[in-house]
Length: 196
Image 1 (spheres, one colour):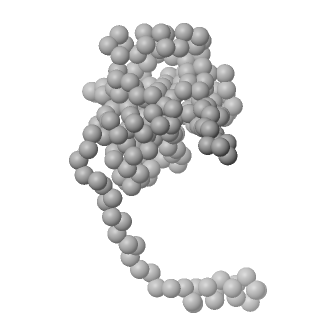
Image 2 (cartoon, rainbow, N blue to C red):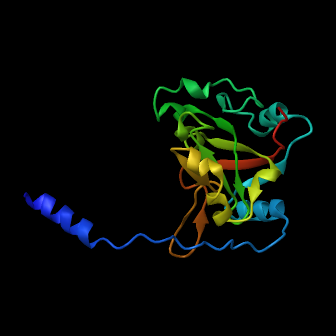
Image 3 (cartoon, one colour):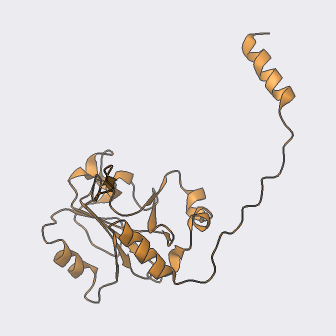
């Protein structure tokens, strides 16, 4: 018998008996204003939360990003001029000014939003654009990371990432600079999911 088979046989013979995984506590703090917690956490990371503008998202985008020429919208709620399905590879979104996406989940504890391949065909569209605008239904905000990992999107997606504001970098003196890389701004727009 080759050495490889000897080793594998020894591992199989000496493997511990299977046992149940421990129950993970809920870790919830109880009822809270999740929108306020999310807004404060995102602000600490130089992100911004706004309520859906009454004038509509198209007008708000035009006013907020007047220099934007290439808008990639991965949601039918906003019309863009760049098709997110049209990128040939991961570097395709590098010249996008604004990416707009609807997230299935926000995390109040960390100010994070979830993006999977279900929202963006090319995942780099969320980090290579100059600005990221995320539509978030307040009902989709959970209290903490433990609740977030229980969300079905993590089981259904091959790719899932939690983003929390523009990335920052701090020097030894503790001075943080935003953005260090990736998007220049991240804005979460509190907009209820449209009824189907």
